[in-house]
Length: 412
Image 1 (cartoon, rainbow, N blue to C red):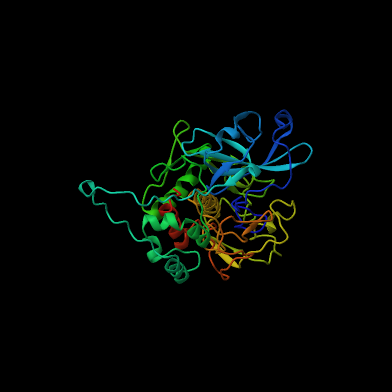
Image 2: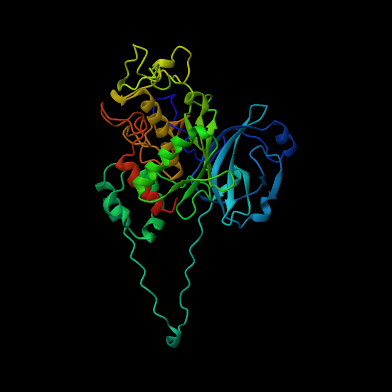
């Protein structure tokens, strides 16, 4: 959860377009080994690419060339994450982690050397048939027209795939995947192998986080009516979850395609995000969140202005009140963070609705818009008094419907 722009502007989930902000020569492998620093790791939607030239590296630090891509001109690779690297000369470049369909050929490729691939459709006509060997094949389901699909989308609540949108044919979802992605802010963000038979197994690296993770898993499992998330072990898991350092980039939680991290410092700060509270009290209290932080409490940012932790002068809250015992308020917040991150693994990007677990104050992060977004926004669309989804660790119907859609699209 990214507190630098507001209490729910979360996680590095604004997915950047593949590009290059600076230039380094990836062919200078020896130099790269000595100077490369990983600045950021970001998830990207899985898309097909062909490599135009260059090499594939074993790690984001470019320590070893493992494949000469001129030998794989006809191989289709699928993107999963992108890293921003920087050299000691302060030059910046993007590398994309890709893998072929079987997953046997995988590694990091200079993003500029990858070109989106759209296979050509070949139709064979005029083939003679032998009536005696002709077999009756089932008639393929007729696809919904793009016009009719758009009418269904327009008739549904904003960013909420309801009714018939969740009961179309497999062909409809495959054919109009990009239409669904853009209209409902979703994408294929989890690495291959995270979900097996519609299920992910989570290894929690810190025992301290297990109760929070269990509650977050239970929320998704209950809402979706199936066991989507389970607890795994160090030896048997498909997704990891543990503590990380989010202070530099201002996140409370982050999903990178294969794992979730929760900021260690903020998690262990009993005044975050609501300010000082009597933690030993079992009395129910009410905390008001608003743009008025003159009292220095009741506002996560205001409580930290003095030492500049997680502070952004442009921060904004809807005026709302959350109620519970101090321990409940803190527990709900961190369960909400983890529930949000697991939502990213299911293929859900941000929405502008404060009541959603997947809410974010802005669609733009670090100057970049989300990869799949219906429109840009710079503030929450809800009205004052709305209970924040992440503050209360509550899934909205929009969150649930979008997760049902991403399953139909094959993202988990």
